[in-house]
Image (cartoon, rainbow, N blue to C red):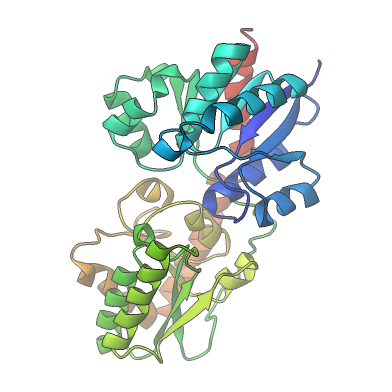
Length: 366
């Protein structure tokens, strides 16, 4: 069988977040006997370097935000360059890892008649589904059943939507059981410092825990982007730490490039958003407390590998942290169950095969 070239559009090339990790897992493990990947990144940086070091063909091509007024003159020029690249690559299919790039996919489809696939990594509204014209996609991949719901509500054919949960490299994220730091119980939140990740609420949770359990320590792992909005939010988080007098209990770890080691240094992960970090923590043998948003409720087995607890009231999350901190044996057992579940549900091989099944269904009909 001839190799079928696939063009992948990445949201970012300058940093590595959850979406970039998932894309890297996919393109590094897609069956090279059947598929020939080429990744297009809108800017240069650490993600581009990561892909190239992994021997994944990568091109940097600026793709201005399609719907922004400032992009009115540049978007068509960029789209034409993308068409030329797809022609040179002889792309049979184009897969975007960010739904905001859907207009570029449609531009390609109209001119080259290629199949187009959009990956939904955020929880959209039905209006956003219509706004970004998911009805034009040949297939859509959602990372959870919850993120599939607004697609169906907006009128997308259910047969054209596949749910594929995020994955984790189980060989890299290895479990470490037992207290990460003797005499302490370390709770972390991981992700870019931004409003969506809710680090301010994490500080409020820490404040409630600190009143009742003196052994708990907290880590905020991640950094803010160098934008006014993100810098302001980080400042607000730090001011909140000072307000509650938690400077000795909350450590800002900054951006970590050694995430497996960073995860091993925790006893418990708290996530107030969602994403692949849940799979990474569970693979490392750590229980996870999350809120019922996005894929969280589908990835955590409540009461077995962690807890799914509403964010409001915050006291409920604090209570669960205190329960585990006071019963470290139970915490370790949950971590062991989390690793077993990660092995069953979040392996890269299973993840990639499900996406390749989508490719096969589309390309076999050409």
